[in-house]
Image (cartoon, rainbow, N blue to C red; front, side, top):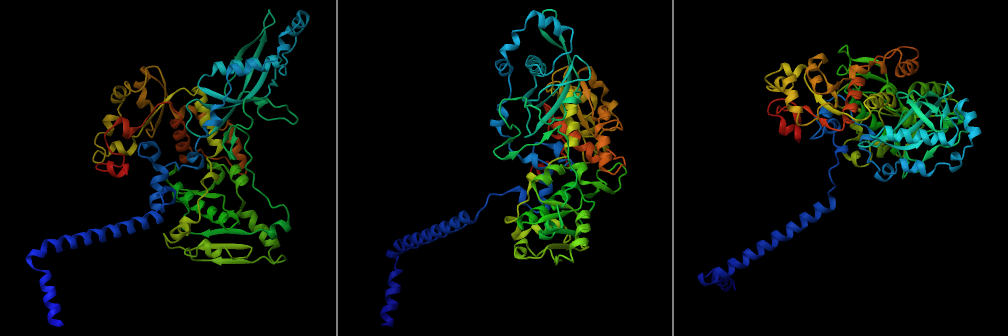
Length: 568
């Protein structure tokens, strides 16, 4: 048997059988590879999730938050992107703006049937701002005057301080607006009745000059809008810049309400005085965990501003969250309490109401493990060793796919955005913008060999002549301290800089008085982060946006031989 078996195997390898056997073996091998490939592909297809940049670790999110491949201005590691930057503009909502024809069609016909006697009596009396004819005229004139914006809502005119003045408010967006934001303006109109009894608008005041129309009065009749609720579509609210800001601290209604609540607080850690992108990445982790656990987040409203943004080049404590972000929107859309107020209430009621505390001192304790905790307060305490004491570590690993950072809850400060709106309005929302990086980089010829020459006035005039038409308003966002350096550009363009608008934050401004009140009577400095934020946002609202490292120079943003790295 053994001998026969051996002969059989030997026979199979005879020369006349080799070709057949080789083909058989190759066929089996190919089939095996095919089966393995199908299995691997099936496993990958079943487990793959598209890459979401919002859920990268902090080392990658910093790059994502502050840059895009074509936006070098945003990538200066100064200003972070917030919730409204990620919102998709609802084109249906934004396309239903008010046209002149809409106003004419709604005009009250009876208003035209004015008797001669009434006309003569009205001509010597005050203008009736409640008259539909006056309202329609003011709307029509505004729409025809400001051709670079779309109007979505007009408020009823309010009588001004003089007999022939009326104040009117409206909600609008720039025609070429890229962000999902509405703006509010209110201006003073001087209205005159001509000899033929027709009304005429003699003058329209400056941005936010119509203060009598600023607030909506009780029992005030609605104005005119094409689609009700323009600032909210499909359950998603959009920022409205220009409305009165109410960012007072939320308070607990009663002892009973406090004792029934469930809370989460983060204490300590190494996030203090870090860059704003780091701060926001960690804060949103805490807010995301609070929402996942269905708990109220106890937040410290004080911020330590990194030396990156301060005029003193030192870290500065004592800043307020509300200086930089929209706290009104946050408290209306999320459950948050101020840390100081919370501890006062805790010390008053914790013992007598039997409220308990659950301490967590390891960031590796995931929110999923805390979901069954019934204690009133979960306190996460972070140590001294970096980077394990960063708050965002809680949201790493398996937690990334469970706890989603609620970006939509954090918007930019509407006070700062109102400065942006004021600057853009003074330019009639009709300007181009140029970002010019100079500063320390122009002095480092080893890393940026061409930057100094490429951003010189002569080079800028040569480069911009094919990009921006002569005579245009040009907003220049730059870190060049001496703006007179760009004076030669004035021969071709009407140039504007952030420093031209200091009246919007000086001691006589609305921003100054409101932030001072917010800061317990202490004046607030318009710091480097605020300047960079406003400068960035005004730049981004230009019709044409010319960027340093894409359009003005071939140097790499981060220095020699880094262009490919930056683009990735």
